[in-house]
Length: 99
Image 1 (cartoon, rainbow, N blue to C red):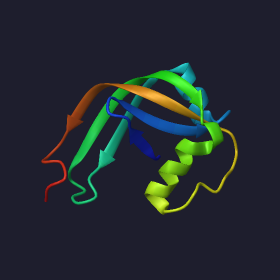
Image 2: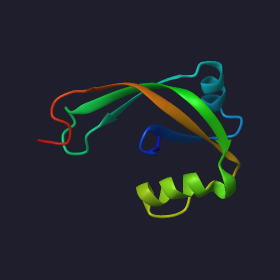
Image 3: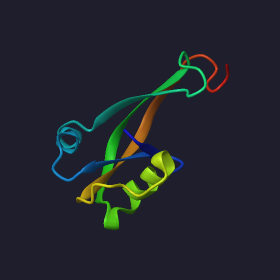
Image 4: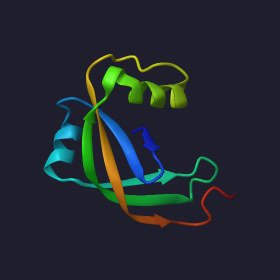
């Protein structure tokens, strides 16, 4: 799953009507883990709750994420939503980003 950070919140995207989107509506608690690209033994666990859901107008959010991760616009041009997640807890392990 591609994620972005707007300074205070985690942003994720999902196709309109997807199981992920339905699950986030039914239970707004969101856990996620990110593994360091430099040391797979270092990771950070984040949990939070969905505080906002907006349409991804003109797929601007998912295109920005696709550009970041794969260097081109997102290929599946179907309607999407952007979920804003307020961070409640961050738990790192090891020295994040160091070998």
